[in-house]
Image (cartoon, rainbow, N blue to C red; front, side, top):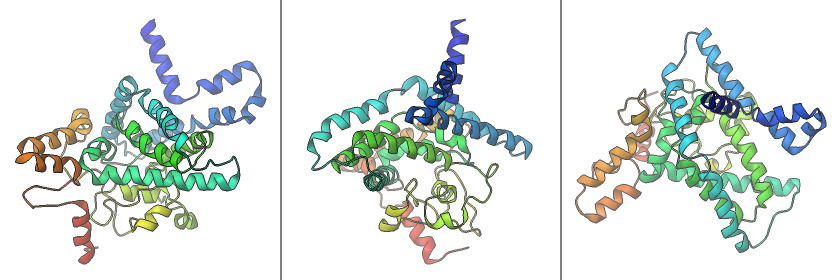
Length: 329
C-alpha cells in the first residue's frame, strides 16, 4: 500500500494538481483569485499539454516514443536525486547577495519590466556558459540530447544543472536590485513559458506565431536553439525576451528551407538513459585523462566543446562561421 500511495503522490505531483485540489476541497473558490490560486491553476497546464501532445503523436503516427521514454527516466531520476538542491541554492544566493544590493526594486509594473530584463540577462549568461564551457556543457547536454522536440524535453536536465543555473541567475538578479518576492514571481512565469516553448510539431506545426515572432522568443526560436544544423547551432539563448540575443549577436530566426535537426553533434545512443545523462561527462573525463600536462587538462574543462589540445578544433563557433561563409541552403 505504501508503494501505491507513493506512486499516487508522484503522479499527482507531476500533474501539479494537488494545490488546486486542496482549494477545491475547501469550497472557497475565491482563493483562485489570489496569487497562490492562480499558480495552482497554471501549474497543471504543461503536464496536460504533454499528455495531449503524446496523444496527438499517436494519432499522427509520430509517437516519438524514444524521446518520451528517456525523458521520463530522467524526470524520475531527478525527482529522487535533486529535488531540493536548486531551491536551496536560490535561498542561499538571496541571503548572501541581498546585503550587497545598491538599490532594491519596488512592486510596480516598470520595476517588474526591469526585473524581467535583468532575469533574462542572468538566463542568457547561464545558458551561454552552458554551451561555451565544456564542464557546464556536460550539465546542459542532457537537455539537448533528444532527437525530436516535444514538451517532455523540458524535463530532460542533468540534476546539477538547475542549481548551477539558478545560482547564476539569482546572483545577477539580486546584485542588480531585483526584489526577492518579485524574483520568485518572474521565475514562475519564466519557468512556465520556458516549458511551453518546447512544444513539438505534433501540437503546433508552425510555431513562429506571426508578428509575435519579432517581439518575443517563440517555440520556433527555441527549436532553432535545439538544432545542431550549422546555421542554428548555439543561437537563441534567451527564454522569453530575445533582447540579449540581439545585443550579443546570437539571434537566429528559423528558415523554412532549413529544417531543424535535433540532438547533439557527438555520436550517441539517444535511446540510452546512461548515454544521454552521463555520456558527455564520460567523454570529457577521457579527454582530460589523455591530455598531456595540467594546462591542457584544465583547458578541456573550461574551453568550448570541440576544443582539442592538438589544435584540431571544431567548436560550434567555427562550424557556424564556416557555414555562413558558404551556406549550402
